[in-house]
Image 1 (tube, rainbow, N blue to C red):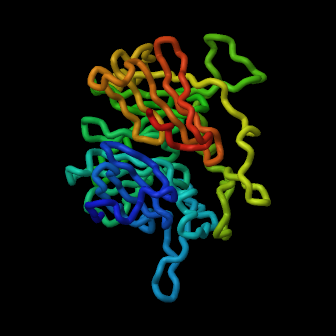
Image 2: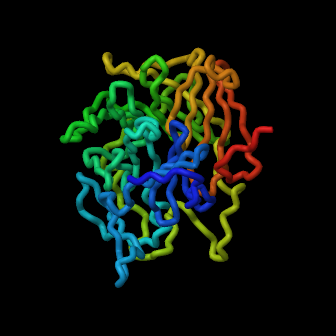
Image 3: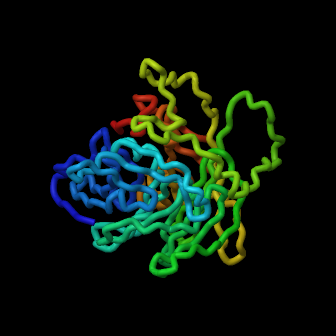
Length: 359
């Protein structure tokens, strides 16, 4: 990793950059070559992370002069090694397929930190420490939704089914330890965060859609038991040699126009449930109130703060946003755990990832 201080002359925080994580005042960005950087937008400091070509499933394709022109991307994991035909992407297209979310262990300004990536295929983990020149693959896990570094120095990685794995990144074996079994999870997303008291919290985001055919009886739990791993590994929709192909979930009309936002199915209501993770008793305990604490959930690194230290924040509230898809309406708001209602934050641009300015 190399560090550049100053006024961010390279301009990594441009509209063409992707943002895949933020913590400690730093943003994890992806440029048009699908390369990763840490950026402190206040101080203008920038740190170049190891090249994307050092991620396990990525290989550079060079021209006669040795310049990287394309990326070859392989669709395999440690347990599913059938090695489907690799895809080939232009430099700026790989990021659409590869990156999900990034996490920081500590403030990079201290000079000692670790960056963890959730990346495809199948939401695997890789990490790099300060000073590393490559990404280290964690092959023994897939389908991770969120991660948190706890005060004990371990990385807690949570799967989409709620199962939690603990990694000691200082152990050369780099083997995960299952600390919590899976839990019933709804369709809206799942997050993990450490509270100021040191407890781990698991937060479920449930989406309610209008005119649903099967209405649930109050008090009944939907049948959402964690699926078998094999259900995750159906043949992915992907391009095998189309350099400019869009991901299958991003449809564009023949004339190049983006799809109509109003034609997309939209959820009517967002509801959050918070659980304390009891690592000793191996159970999830539903939490009815955060007290003076407040949660920030979204593409950022999940965060729990004490509202008493930040008077402008509301205790027992969840500030949330989403990034479900490139062409979907954004859902940004504040959820009140006292009365289970949410207040929307409306962006001037309906598809914008950025909140409106505060006047």
